[in-house]
Length: 374
Ligand code: AMP
Image 1: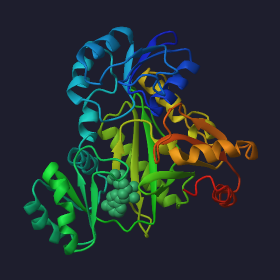
Image 2: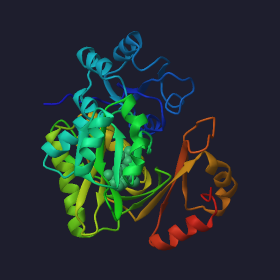
Image 3: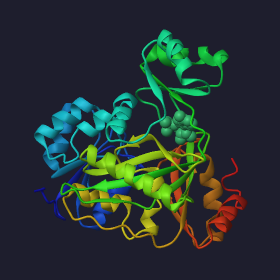
């Protein structure tokens, strides 16, 4: 049995960024009310929510207030305070639980969970000191990557080491926190599978996306990913295995590398809707946000259908002005801007989704537009 939440009731969201905003917009479409807890005023989610609680994510009184106004609580990012979330599960309905956040907040517990689910990760060692790194690095070999166990994103908190001469470059990371050192994977492609599951165990993957990063930040997602059927099966089966192992309720994004021979290796997990799933707003019969709301509200899930191949391009701070200056040239582009006021360089300000019957031609059009040249 799962609890069903109905339109008219209130969904509480921890985190006021773009993921919260797009969750809230989906929820509002179905007639739910939305409350958000976020420390900044006028946040992307706050702008579309019915109730805004402006306070730090770990503020006990604020969490209690969120609990008192919400019939169900979810979160839009994983770096929330685990203890606070755990306490929240005792006073509010948090169907996703706190355990998934605990596991995915730390690369060590995350990799252990992936391995326990029976899925492949790059060879790795946990390192607590610089001496540990020196000891283990021979077994891993070069090139390798040192990543902080906690808090890294968009390439932050990691250091690639190409040879023994680079070893000192990792000193700063290890002095500050526990790390993992992992083999550099000579991948052909990066893909992500967004898997969603409700309390009844109904599980669906969204069409698999091919991800292109620029300076470690997601630039484009191409859907469907240009992979073989065998790789597609491997990717979906791995995501479903991990979702089952973690008894997922809600959304899990599984980032993977595709090797030359078509095999996959899991890189990392995100326990929430993911940037690479934004295309689903226009290109699928159910978006990642709509499905997430259904999952946490105990509704039956919909089997995702892709209407047409699609490309999602991120709009960073430096792309906003060129994009808005060129909107009139591209009537077929779906433009999303998240309502952030400061368009800082490399800050995610929005995205564009383009449905197309000719991916190569559209990739060319995106490049020739000049909008993303910086
Ligand atoms: P992460 O923070 O783990 O998602 O890493 C950010 C990006 O760094 C990934 O999307 C990859 O492009 C690259 N990367 C991370 N780990 C590895 C690895 N073991 N081998 C090769 N590239 C990696």
